[in-house]
Image 1 (cartoon, rainbow, N blue to C red):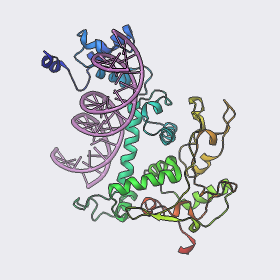
Image 2: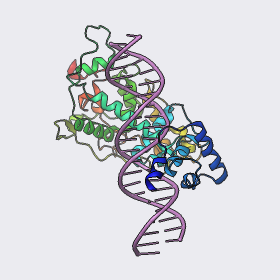
Image 3: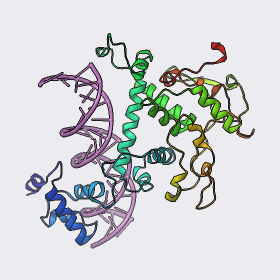
Image 4: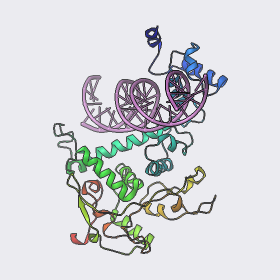
Length: 306
DNA sequence: AATCGCTGCAACCGCTTTGTT
DNA sequence: GAACAAAGCGGTTGCAGCGAT
C-alpha cells in the first residue's frame, strides 16, 4: 500500500491543469493544508511540492520572468552581508521576489566570481587561438594564474570583508561593461570624502595558508544597525556609472530623516583610522588586494610605475 | 548545422522549526 | 513533555535556452 502511494506521487514540471487545481484549492482554503491536496485525491503531489509551487510560481504579485533591478541586486548584497544566507528573510525585503529567486541570484553571482578567479583547466583547448580580438575577460583569463577553490573562497571572503559585498559585486558586473579607470575612481572617491593620504604600507600584512599576502585589517564595521525598511529602498546607491563612488554619499531618508549611510553600511575601508575624520589610504584603496582580483580591471598606475 | 559551455530557473531533497495531539 | 505531522528553509540538481565556436 505504501509502495503504491509512493508510485502515485508525481514529480517534475507542473502542468497548467495542475496549477489550476492548486489555485482552486488555495482560493477555497487559503495557502495552507497542503497535504490535504493529495489526501483528497486532487493532485498526485506531495504537500511540500504543492506549497513550493504556490510560493514560487502561483502566488499573486510575483515578479516572474523579470531580472533583478540594480536596486534589488544591491539590496540583496547588503542584506546578505548582514543576515548571511537567510534567503527567506532577505526575500521579505524584496516585493515580488521569492527566497528561491534570491538564492538563485546569489549563487549565479557567486559562480561568476569563481569563474573569474579560476583559470580554465589546462586540458581545455584554447578556443581563441589565432584570434586577434580576444575580449577583455578572455585576455585577463590568459594572464591570471590558476587559483584553487580554497583560494577562490579565501579571496572572496577577504575581499568582501575588506571592502564590502557591494563593491566586489559591482566590480564583477563591470566585466560586462567598459574597463573603468580606477585611478579616476579612486581620485573621485578621495575627493568625495576628503581623505587624508596615509601610506598603506604602514598597514601590517599576513600570509594566508594558500600563500596570499593580505593586508591585516581591522574588524569590518557592521552593516545595517537596524532593520532596513522597504520604504527606504530608494536610498540604495544608484546603479554603476563611472562616478559610482558618489553613490556612497549621504542621502536623507524622507520617511524618518535618517541618513542612507546609517541604513546601508557601505563598509568602505577606513584602515582603522575612522576616528581620524574619514581617513583612508589613497595609495592603498585598491593596490594591496590580491592582484588576481584586480587584473580583471585596468591597472592602476602608481608612483613606482613612473 | 552541430557541438559546447554558460546561465537562469524550477523543482527536489534533507534538515530544522513550528504546531498539534 | 513527548511524539508526530506539517510547514518552512537552504542546498543542490537537472534541464532548457541561448550564444559562441
